[in-house]
Each structure stands twice: as structure tokens, then as C-alpha cells.
Length: 337
Image 1: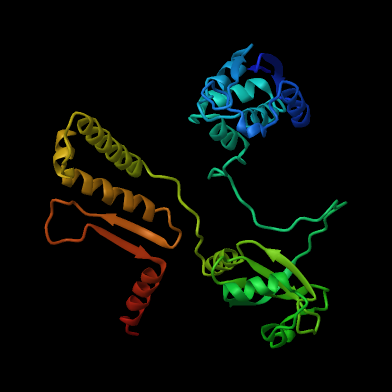
Image 2: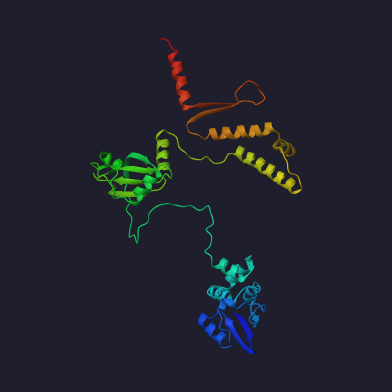
């Protein structure tokens, strides 16, 4: 707590802040200072003729007192201390010590402001949650048709599911239960965000039953890839990619080092030469990285690499399942019986 000693017309008042506002006003009134608290500056440079002394007893008080300037007043200091002493003193000291505020009013605004929401790389999942759910019994739903709709229309649908919609009414036949009691549904998704709603209207033109499906568009695209025999699975980084990234990192470090020494302009070719690389080396690394990635793809049956020093020939020759089948068909078509 910060001690305040005020002398006015041969009367003296001493109190510790923070203090209840009315009690503080009454105490000041007893020495003749019947003025608003915000009119009592915490410096001795005033027109009323009072003197002020401030007493701090610990590091937190000293840190706050060191921010007091000419126009700070007793009301601002009392408000600040009221807030500070509600929290943990060590935590408050750290926040005030690290603050760049130059006076009490700035400091109060800064430490009472809500914390800024910092961006992070944590997973964000958009879904719905049930209040006090006792159990979950997920079921399988068969998507008969997927319909993409504009963002505004999707927002309206998610906010008012009981409203009738033409695209639901026109696809009633796609929402039903089969003989095995499997539910066949409509999947409506947002063209912009990709989120969707799984809908069973049970013969109605509105979403009588619905479930929010995050990333529905991506799920559909992945399903289509798998049906075609392809999978959108990111391959692990290859050895050639690692070496290429190492060269890039080394080049960036070298440029940064010489930039601190006063250089401003660089060419990638010169930097690579200083690192004992030339463009042919880099081209070879890029080629090898491409080849290694191609060889991980299930639809690629063969990848052949040619010598870069041999002119007028392809650097990479690729055979896919389709070209392999075509070659076999061509060979058969050339046979005569």
C-alpha cells in the first residue's frame, strides 16, 4: 500500500491507498480540501497550496510511485491501486515493471485492458457440443447427394434450420431409411468455408434432423480421391529435400551475416558459389527431390533419371498405370493371328 501525506492550511492528513472513495473524500474534507479527488495532483506544483508526500514500502509500491508525474491525481492513483491489490502482487509487479507507461493514467489503462488474443498454431475445431451429455451413440449416415451453396445461404441455414429451402424440397427422395434401417442423407456445404450440414428432412422441405460437419468439402474431396485410387497423403520429406533445405538455410544465414556487416545487395548465384555450390548442383538436388516424391505416389509405376550432362534427352521419364496399360494395348493391337 502507498502512504499519502497531505499538508493544507497547517492541517495534516495521512492515509494509505487504496481506500474507499467516500472515506478518502471525508478524510480530505477534515483538513479543508473539499474538492473532487481528480483535482488533487500528486505533485507539489498546484494552485491550491497543499503539499504532498508519497511513501512506498515495497518494490511494487516503489514501481508504481516511480510512474507518478506532474498531472497525475489522487483519484487515478487510488483506482490503480484498488485494481492492483486485487491481484497477485508478484504478477502485478512483473506487469508494471515491464510496462512502458509513463504515467499513472496510462498504466491503469494498460493493466486493466483485456489481454490481446495472440495467434497460435493450435488446432481449432469448429463443431457443436451438447450440454451435460450423458453418453454418445454415433451412427453411420450415407450421403446420397452433396450440394454446395453460397456462404450467405449456408449461414442462414445453420441459424434457422426449421425454415423451408428449395434445395431440400427438391431432393426429398435422397433422404430416407433403407430396409436395413440405414439413414440416407443430404450433405449441404459452404462453398467458402467448406463446413457442412448433414440433413434428413424425413419428407419435409426443411432440415428436420441435421448435424454440423466441419470440413465437409475436404472430406468429400478426399473420398473422391480414394474412390479414384489416389490418396491425398503428404509424403515425408525426402533426403534430397533435406539437403536442398540445408543449402537454402545456409544461403540465408550467409546473406544475413554480411547484411549486418554493411552489405545490402546480393545475388543468389554469388552466394551459392561462396558456399561451394553452383546452379547445376542445385538443379540436381531439385531433380532428385522431384524424383523421390514421384516414387512415393501409388499411381506412378516407374521413374527413370537421365544424366544431366547428356544433351537432347529428357531428365525424368515417368510411367503411370494408365501409360503402362496403353503400352500393353498397343502391343496387343500389333499382333496378327
